[in-house]
Length: 218
Picture 1 (cartoon, one colour):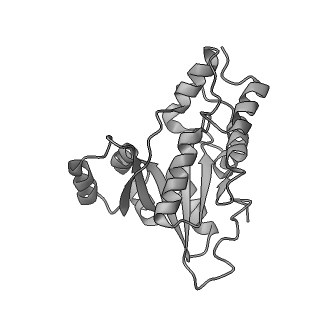
Picture 2 (tube, rainbow, N blue to C red):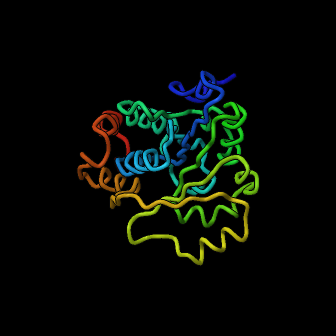
């Protein structure tokens, strides 16, 4: 069976009577930054997750018409970024699977890999949660994982949208507000392209990798 996580591949096997919680954070991570890491850490603590794996997209469908950094570089930056946190890992499953990247396929692969005593928690932005009913095989996603919709202070999903989601789908969704960081991957790429610093906006190891490999320059 393929390895989905070097650190947590055997999660749940040592103690089949215990329930484990595995967080799954997908994204392009182009590049990964401290906002991603802070979000995952706060969710891990709030929901008692045993581990969080970052899954960089192989061929993100929603970015077909955009230039995306090579998957190998994005994966390596994720690995560098999470290395210092023993509760985090990066997974290459979407990249190795090939073809277009769909969340349902990733969750299905994870569900088939881990035993039943491992619960999956898919972490995504609250706005994405609202649109998830339109995602590929969304009804299957609802059965494969619980959803955690994260939002920044002042950007909470409205009660109306939450109610609509609850009425229109079978999703089990929890919402949590995380400490905001006004930072995005697109901003980091623009900063590098314009010759500005991204130091302290991402992990030092990722900062060094971007510089060494000349990523995001004009």
